[in-house]
Image (tube, rainbow, N blue to C red):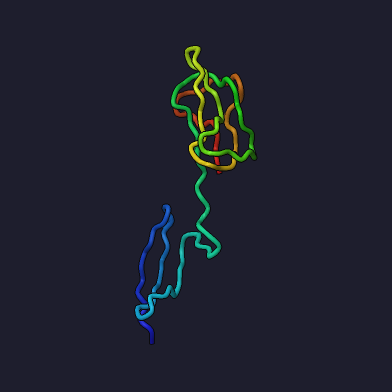
Length: 114
């Protein structure tokens, strides 16, 4: 009978129970989390927030748009200055939470990336 060691492994905030055969080091079983052999687990949505209160001067993205890190998503106007809000990572625009002319508070979600 093959001896198996059990481990608790957390990757990107998802915890898995892993069983490894002691002699060979081969993975015998993985359970828990959302493990798939086809690739890494799906990433969590990214909420892009404003750092200052103001008005939405312009929305430069729409739901379904593919964006790259550094792309301007929204421009917030505060005290007659325009401040661009950039995509922190590459992704797909899952939703746009604001509209042109809307007043926003500091820390408010503007766009959600998937």
